[in-house]
Amino acid sequence: MYNAYNAQQTIPRAEALSAFMRGVYGWMAAGLGLTSVVAVAVASSPAMLRLVFNPVALIVLVIAELGLVMMLSARINRMAAGTATGMFLAYSALNGLTLSGVFIAYTASTIASAFAVSAGMFLAMSVYGLVTKRDLTSWGSFLFMGLIGMVLASLVNIFVRSSALGMLLNYVGVLVFVGLTAYDTQRLKDMGSYAPMNDATAIRRGSILGALTLYLDFINLFLIMLRLFSGNRD
Image 1 (tube, rainbow, N blue to C red):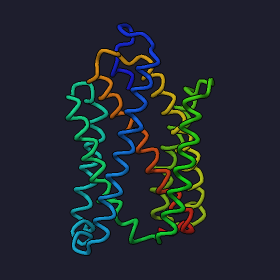
Image 2: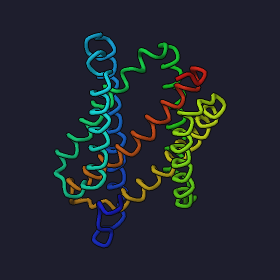
Image 3: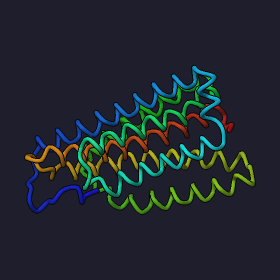
């Protein structure tokens, strides 16, 4: 992510950091809002639910979402700001399609409770990442290993179907994603501190990539909290 800016040609500016972080949180909020609107709209339409939740459509959606994330992460520095913004919003909308099933699988009270707790935890850890003087760089490798371990254990649990392992993975997941929220926020703060004041396009592209990073942290935390609030049922 640091490749978005050439730190040798810029100097730290409080104004640049403020503009950058406003962009990050603003676009993240826009992405979450679009995801929510699409999810509710699809969940309210039996025809759309039948269209989205069939094996072929789900595979296409997952591939499209992964493709958008990888393209944004790898090619953000070569994209026009408008293109990067459009791809992020497209990803948010596609994610709304796949997350529409949440409104069918869980009660409104469970969704509201999980969202409220997730938002509170995300806000607290993001603020911590912004204000702490502690260098969180060392968290990166630990959190990445934890994430990989979660993925592998989840694959094993598909076949084992252990409720105890599933619950353990949820608790580990909470720790991993609250940690990633603080870690990613601090990285974005460092990145924004060297944002070029005279390059609005670079600031916009960096803000979009930062928004995507925090968006993913929040969505994963929310999905884990949903499982915890529902008693870990699938």
